[in-house]
Length: 449
Image (tube, rainbow, N blue to C red; front, side):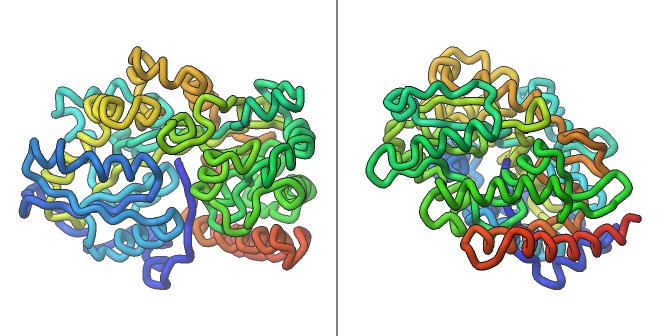
């Protein structure tokens, strides 16, 4: 999640994104227009794997060269939004997610992909997990992005450290239990911190895990009738809890730590716990890149007032309508989301690295079940338990667990998390950060009241 993560959008792109429709979406066409395509994607491990595998498999089989541009998450979101919203047409395929798909589809910016998926007998559209297919579909029920991998969120912990301290981590912990454990294991080994929590600004960086905490603490960004709640007691309690936990027992350099930094900290044994995307587990269990492979335990996303709190995300392949290479682009996307590609990753890179969380059949593959024995079942159940229509204790004005599904949220979430990141850095207070955030949220709310 998927995740996630928005830099401030350039003026022209922001203006286009807030429009209810766009003109001049581009003919798109179905001609290959050449034998190469440009693909823009986020710099997560699964994307780095496909960049390594494509030439000797997809390109060799199809003759289609794929030019990859890989960017950190915040930069990716900025770049892809500018390219698609302004109809620049630089890329034929881009990774986006459940937040963008319904909004961008409504604006007419994305190619419909169901027709391609249904014509490809090997793709097996019916095998896609229902939450993933639904999150990437338009109001017409058609797919407008093809999932590369899906994720929820959970707690990862170093089993050796917990055993040394005599700690049993509950399978469904509360956030207070997590905080208590973080205090006990902080410094358990030289230089080791108790927990890693994202502090890097961005609606999908710091904003993703924080919003799940807000949800389960009883808070929300907006009430059902669009009353801003950023400075509400529940939102404030959750944010204070998060900021206090990461300041007391979190990773070094927390205000600059996002998914990638926390993955590195956990895999190198620098932190005892990490709350983040379920998709991280495959990298943690790869002995070629992780010092803690085979030593990690997994628990469901911590809760307070709700039964579950994991987010729901899919990094997915989308085709802008501006592409002139729709046939070649669709061939790449279908391959990259296929069962065959999962098998290729398993055989070439290791079965724990399979981009899972999108297909039911993945969880029936013997080799994958063995490699993912520690985390496969809890990942699948976390995805199935995520509730984007009702993730908290009150009704919501839109869908979304870790985001609010309106165009303005990319800017709002980024600006508010900039304030909260500053609180983590000790440059401001949580109260001041949320007062500033409340004013921004009230301006957004005016568009919907």
